[in-house]
View 1 (cartoon, rainbow, N blue to C red):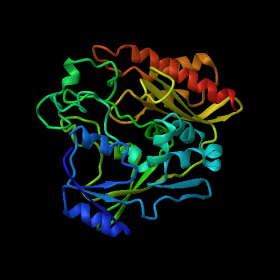
View 2 (cartoon, one colour; view 1 turned 180 degrees about the vertical axis):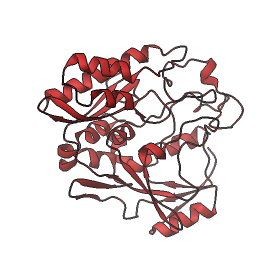
View 3 (tube, rainbow, N blue to C red; view 1 turned 135 degrees about the horizontal axis):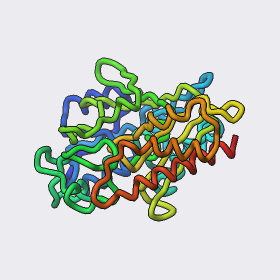
Length: 325
């Protein structure tokens, strides 16, 4: 592991200025992903800027909206009574992430920025376009059971690992970012980038910019997060789905659906959402919506099974939400 310096800051301005001016610097809060990447030689930083003393851990409700500070610990957000009541999909996604020990350390901002879990990316022995653009994607010709069936490119087929990001995508969340000169509010759908020809660029964050909060503007009482994985705990999703429904008299007024474990970013199922509008809440309708959700899927050599898994996960998630109405 490369030696590094450490500095603790007490103001956002100092933290942002330091990282903006020194391209070898990086923010650290929980450090549950960053330190592992540094130990593996995948990511380097000459100086780590500790932001744990910044006032970014509040969870604030106002009307039908919520603002979650970026260094709020995952466990605190998951156990917050109002989040469990008004945004169950957020709590459920967090509780199915990592282990209790990691959730006590990890922050929501760091969770959204965690790097892909592709084994080829995390082992410097293998060529990877995310680490070194232009040298190739080992996963495309390698073992790609856990990789993308949506949104991939010939340069990268890795999937985004965050459970929380999938839940927030189904809620149309907004990411609040502060830089040296301005604060930006970016839709989560725009915040994450597809790999295209530049897989090393994963988000719209600019050097020195810091995620300060996540905002959700409407309650989502009728929401649910389902995660399908190889084992029951401490495992990343093969397929996950976050669903938020607006139902009136057994008719679906609107639906928001996002998938995880299947794309380089949380994957919004717009076709399925459109199909569900004005439809009755029954399994036949849910099955047809699931077919609409996968019509653009392009599986890799080893992961065609994910298409069927996506369909079954969506039908189950929609059924659970309706049962709990």
